[in-house]
Length: 304
Image (cartoon, helix red, strand yellow):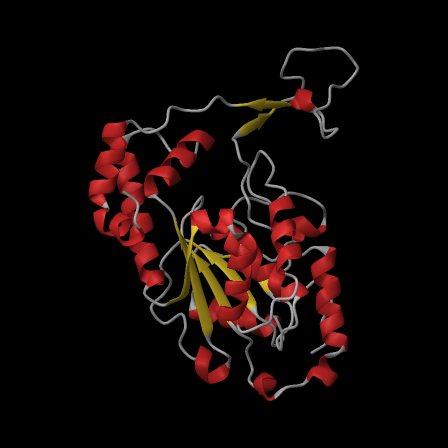
């Protein structure tokens, strides 16, 4: 059970203090996570439990498109396993574009009996979960839902999507096909608005679904709220959170050649960042067509 660093799935760029890329499927761990894993490993013999007799730890899948609440869920699960008492210890967290049986089992072996926390957006191989109940502690899926029109408004604002209704409807069709696949097996389906209006209660609910007691829900909610989004080039490697706005890094982009650097209210160099103006949000006619195209989804969740 002894763990050393670096390991097979540690991101080599991240270990060297470099940014890898937006869809990196390697492991990116903070010092806090490594320390929590080390404490768990050192106390493992005292914590030995019959549940841990199986080869694999549990797998927690957080599925769904960006801007729907799934990044919040991913970090809530990740932080619950770090801060709360769990029979399995802190998890290894990943973003996986495509889940396969062999890849998942290799990562479980790497985790040495600890959980996996996986963020995904796509439908996996048909046999991805084969053997998880027999050789491990199975899996739990969590999804989040939000009015699709608001999701698209956010994507247009950030600049992730071309403002073309045909492109939007095509992308939504792919999103919803994957979403419905995962929702059918989900242990919990979280409402985006509730995540933001009552985060502590939602964390407590999530902890119950995972099967652990939540005594640090307020701290975890506060920590999630304070997490920094990613750099201009992509999401934060640990939290998988994207910037709130699309930005372009440019040296002296404002044309100021003065040697004195300008800083924002947080003390960051403000002269090297240019915010791309917001694209126009959906027209009312476009919002109606999106709702009509996915009326069952919107009716299910009460999005009029």
